[in-house]
Amino acid sequence: MTGVETSEAVEAEQKTSLRVVVNGTAYERVVPVRRLLSDFLRHDLGLTGTHVGCEHGVCGCCTVLVDGRATRSCLTLACQVDGLSLTTIEGVKSADGGLHPVQQALSDCHGLQCGYCTPGFVISILEVLNSPDELDLSEEGVREMISGNLCRCTGYQGIVDAVRQAAVAMGRDGDAGKGAPA
Amino acid sequence: MKPSRFEYFAPESLAEAVALRDAHPGAAVLAGGQSLLPIMNFRLGRPEQVIDLRKASELAFVRVQNDVVEVGAMTRQRDLERDEGAARANPLIAESLRLVAHAVIRNRGTVGGSIAHADPAAELPALLSCLDGSVEVAGVRGRRRISAGELFVFHLTTSLEPNEVITSVSFPALEPSWGWSFLEVTRRHGDFALAGVCAALKLDGDRCVGQVRLAACGIGTTPVRLSTAEEALLSRPLTEKALREAGRAAAGYVTAGDETQASTAYRRQLVEALVRRSLLRAAARLERRTS
Ligand SMILES: Cc1cc2nc3c(=O)[nH]c(=O)nc-3n(C[C@H](O)[C@H](O)[C@H](O)COP(=O)(O)OP(=O)(O)OC[C@H]3O[C@@H](n4cnc5c(N)ncnc54)[C@H](O)[C@@H]3O)c2cc1C
Ligand code: FES
Ligand code: FES
Image: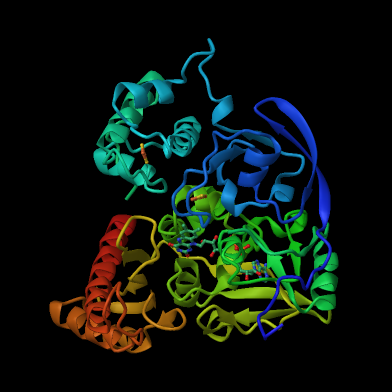
């Protein structure tokens, strides 16, 4: 070895047994403790709708719901969600099994092109529209709401329109135009 | 990229966490992971052990008592932002938190993690400095309190001993007689600030500045208390002249070098403008709070 630090300081790969409920289905798996939640979902559970872009929290396309809260799966170890309940894009649908209002709105408003970023947008928007927090549906407010997700195709306008359409469909448009409290 | 191998511990109590920390000097404490995991994913850090505090539920609380908002280190940033008691006791806390990253990051990021990470561009360390807050830390030899002024040493460096853990962060309350403001300039919403200024202000009967606290983020190797700008304002009304002098004094604290994001000269201009805007906003709110 020529002074290059190896990562073999820890010789054996430690594994742990993990129980989670994802989209209503219970899973139990044994995984290395360093497994990222994003990789756990994609590789261990085969749920490849959760995308991976940057792996440092910036792009947002790996976002999933952990106990109802939008979470970067690339900045979460799988073992950190042991015992918790998750929703990924595969679990998002309307009551009748069709597209959820957020998905329908993105489709109607041309809020996607290649679709790589879309699962992350759907999850992030879903959390906000389902939260008890006051909504700011002004143009600026919606842009702030989606600022944690990057899209390289659409230029965002279609996504902004989709958030507003989805808010109406989900009965959250009563808050429309209200600014953030001063 | 993925983290390199490590040994993982999830202690169920603070005492257990502290013992593990003492036994493993090469370990990293994992709180929300929103700063640590990017570092590990890119292998900029390769801790041999990771001590995850998620099961130490005694570290997640918000307590408002004796004019202090005490926040457990593992309290998620988003939970503090939504806490009504904290908002009543000190509205500047939620205002600062709304500038931290994005809501999704704040869902997991913790208050203790942000303070321990000590990024000079981060908002919570600047808030703690502005308010003269403090942290409580625990080690194998017991607990001690460190004031904000003594905590932040350098870029990503605090005065914590390697075997200590932050247990809570204390933000002094702001009575209704105080006005407040946190403003910053970022390239994109949710980015770390190029510069930010946190202000709290109290006017006396003649509308002169009775007490004032100013701190900045993004301008040096630590959060910076803008003491000479504070002194320049004392016992004076917020006239153009006073604002200009305070802004200039504040600009003198910028030590960040020229970078692709911003030059030193630009950051000086930002701080000057932000001090002015923050003071005026704090004063306007004071008017509304007291009228
Ligand atoms: C895309 C993105 C944008 C961001 N933008 C901002 C921003 O604009 N402003 C901002 O302030 N932050 C920002 N952050 C950082 C975010 O606020 C982090 O949550 C925070 O810096 C660290 O908190 P954490 O709980 O995630 O800590 P972790 O990542 O778990 O830990 C961070 C460091 O602190 C140590 N540590 C954690 N808890 C303790 C403890 N109790 N005692 C001792 N040491 C401890 C860890 O060992 C580690 O070294 C951003 C992060 C991302 C991913
Ligand atoms: S892959 Fe997680 S935020 Fe980009
Ligand atoms: S649709 Fe292609 S990145 Fe958003």
